Image (cartoon, rainbow, N blue to C red; front, side, top):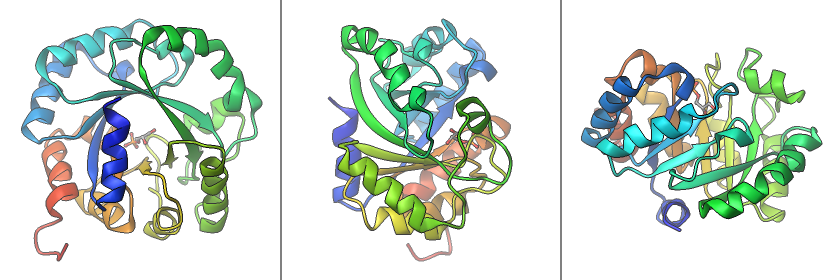
Amino acid sequence: ATVYPQFKQLKAENKNAFAVLIDPDSITPSSIQRIAELCNEAQVDFVFIGGSIMVTTHVDICIQEFKKQSNIPLVLFPGSPSQVSPSADALLYLSLISGRNPDLLIGQHVISAPGIKASGLEVISTGYMVIDGGVPTTVSYMSHSAPIPANKPDVALCTAWAGELQGKHVIYMDAGSGAQFPISKEMIHKVSSNIDIPLIVGGGIRTPEKVYENCKAGAQVVVVGNAIEKDLNLIKEMSVATKEGIAGQIS
Ligand code: 1GP
């Protein structure tokens, strides 16, 4: 295992990391090379890949293209079992603990287990929590599950605790890709300060300031996808914000 020890170290040392999310549906092999170069320059800590629902073999091609350019750990964030690729470095084995759909709590896991066992991938058991981001997101629709209300940090904490008690290795709080409102610093702080496992936060983050705010609130890993697709300069600015803070603000 290489990725999870890094997550745990971040938590233990109160440090932060930046993850770029690549959606295989909205990327070409040539643009992935450019993104890989920019991630190298910006010293991005992790690259997450996946999150969409339609893709099958394309994930493998994206991973291979990326690995030609970069040694940054590639972590699968699968939208379905078909996105599990042995070429990645690790797999977020997501269980949608904010939802009440048994298929996404255990059903898909049974289907994907033989392939994952055979793959030799590092598996990171992940309590995945969708938080209301102001607009209906694909994950809410596809999962037939309501998100956790954005103004209910106590519900988020109880859900995260349940995940921790069940033995999940990390909690991933996600406002959903392209969320109108990212998760509040109050909710991040409430959850992070009360659990002993690392916390990943993503969904609707558009500025380096919000990346920094999430770090200060206690997120170990901050994930950004959409905003980076629109403006590649953000890779550097956001990666710096997780390590050095924002110019003019005391970190
Ligand atoms: C979505 O957390 C990720 O699952 C990232 O969301 O694309 O809105 O940055 P964005």
